[in-house]
Length: 366
Image (cartoon, rainbow, N blue to C red; front, side, top):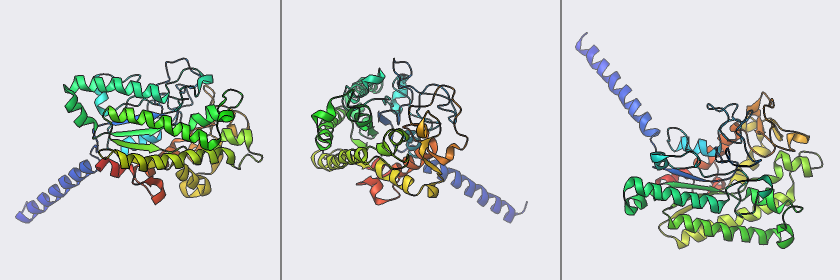
């Protein structure tokens, strides 16, 4: 091989190495850990072994997930799985129910199906871990981290770099306020009063997280519950028109949550809070489904009754084949295809309204 051939080979070799290095850097883990609080939208197995009707550890749930049924209320990934990928994590964040040893240093998923901000929310479904219970579980995790890292100062330095994703409130409407035969809240509070009460309780739990090391908060708004197959099946005359009284109540909560972000950013200078507009992102998917590859937006891919919206998927029920064209997997929960769109837009906003004052990608660098 001549001198020119050797030089050319070296150049190619260096370019390949640079490309590999660039790839590694692009996908590098951006934060040391990711802590997740929420409900069935992001539960990844915490309800599997508790006495509850709110469980998804059976087929067809997980039909498109590499590990099969895990407790995720989807055919595949949830939004936080997608966000973890975007943040550069190799593998998903473990559920609190099975997180052991040094696993907790990557973060923990505390989410529980049927959980709410209010402790009584979802009780008709049996066992669940409310937001206050999830916060208590996080405090246990902090003690584990202290033991692993050796002292509280090292733990504080570690945790302040992590992202804390909090998404609750859906069940406080779905499995509380809009179930007047089971819960008294709709008789006790106007929608505006109820949103205020929820935000007050939410704030108290956030402050406990803050006092236990949390500094980077991503607060996720409530989605369009009034557009779910369940709401359409029960309250929509044509099975397509979203139920406005539910969505209006959801927006009252979201507006107060966004205002809370401003309040907390102004009063906790060493912490960063952002608001993620799940409601608005879903509005885009419903208004212009074809742009995102969706064909069916008003029915579950599996389920029972009108719009497949009466209840969740039955064990071993055969779901629709064209799952990528469905916005909803069951009566309440999005498909993996929808979760990918939402998760990516929460990580990196495509519209200015997706995230306030900025998105998760910037929160990771803050």
